[in-house]
Length: 327
Image 1 (cartoon, rainbow, N blue to C red):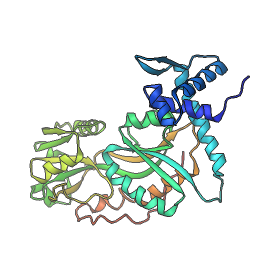
Image 2 (cartoon, rainbow, N blue to C red; image 1 turned 90 degrees about the vertical axis):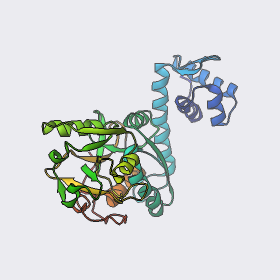
Image 3 (spheres, rainbow, N blue to C red; image 1 turned 135 degrees about the vertical axis):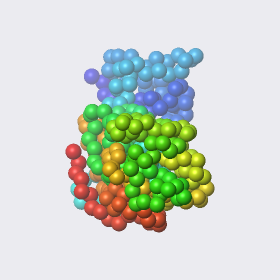
Image 4 (cartoon, rainbow, N blue to C red; image 1 turned 30 degrees about the vertical axis):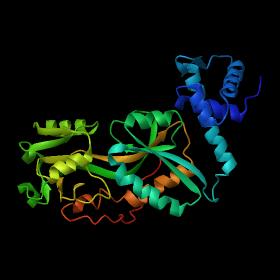
């Protein structure tokens, strides 16, 4: 059987990210004819058509091509581990490509991008922010090493590590009568105007929370941005229901104060986790990133949730230890 070079694998592994061969060739810094020859060579070697190239329709991978590209990315990742000497006791270096769920990215990503490079200066971080569907697709295709997302509604086939505990909280205008207490009962909010954060899985969480108590929320507005929920709450238009997040000051983007209260009894407790496909080995660099995330964010949900009646000063949470293990 003819040999397949790493360069051929590198070229083909990049193809799923582009809709035309010309765009792929430009990104790879080769001519379009050279890329075409590399693809043709691979197809002859594997004995299958890997992509369809049409001038009018661009570049389309066949099912075999999609599988080949995914496997090529895994081979390239393993090869990088060997070349970088990623062994126990050696300095970590290389790249970690991680994803973060969009709704809490502003609470998590700055902490990681600021502090982790200080601890591991030879490791480069590349971040992708997106929906669950975006992140899972990127993990499966090998474009991400690890993703940080909610534990709820995850499909089978992923290993996970808990980073911090999260629960649904009430966001109220400071002058709201219920803000006077240290906690809130969900039943007391059922008749109040709700600014619904209408994004999955938040919408499902909220509907299920009310339904479990035999209640229905009175929705005053549906918005798809957390900062807009906070802005409307800060102006007294209604209350919000959001999952707890680290590093969040109790105020809107306009600088108006917001009162954040826990529920008693608790509502929708879950976890934010780091995940990766169960058939992939987590690199030491990616594992170190999760260690750092647990260290800096892991106490959230144990200390911060209990002190939501006080003003959060925005400082990084103290070290809480990992408290979790790789599955």
